Image (tube, rainbow, N blue to C red):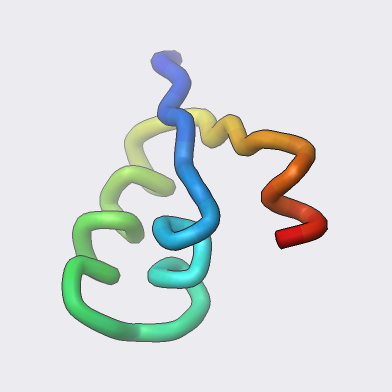
Length: 42
């Protein structure tokens, strides 16, 4: 499976519905997700 790197703004779209949230949902379905450890703090 391929890996998609997401930044903080994309993670927000996953949990707070806004423009392009549907795209982020599709990425979560198709890819393994990688984030920076800094995203946890952000």
